[in-house]
Image (cartoon, rainbow, N blue to C red; front, top):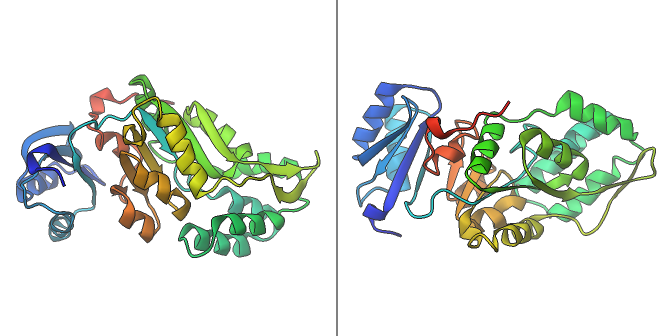
Length: 294
């Protein structure tokens, strides 16, 4: 671990509360404090003895819901933003929503949950779930996107701000290109990668085009897009499921977003209380530097 003087702790409250934030900064004995968002986010240099356990204890004692990131000061503003889609950039799991149209949502959602927790293999789970979508009319995919899919709070601001500062942006999803192309466009991402659902021009065939984009493929996309930017250390990777773990742990800043326990435990930091703008605060951006997209 780096010396304390090389570390920085960023705190982001769920709700704006200037007095609570000031008390936390004092209780944690931070110095060289920099405000990032009035009454909501700030950062400072932690004492040498500060640990994640002591941060958690301080938050519990204060009764404050907040996200935090303890990291090295060096290279904080990343050159690559690489994000999962389902339950990260959007609030839904697309395959679960499609399964609702096919009459299998409960069954498919149960498999999805187990796969995201890492209890079963992702590739096999995806194949089994897609098989249940056989004969689903293609028109239902567009209806699903329009009626069910919602962009998560802060996603557009995160993307726009990092792009304005020269970063590349990539969506890597274990879901489907039908949705990733539309979500990437809606949020502002330049690139997207996902699985391809096969169809006969009228309906889904119940098959997905190999090879399946899973955990290792996400890691490969991270390496591919970061190779000319300084390597994975130059990237911030955000996801919620077990298939995001490899890219999250390999990146310079791996963020678990309302994630499964195993993912949150392995990530560098987590967003559990606030929105995706917090990934900007963690990189040292201030409100005044945010680019708010529509």
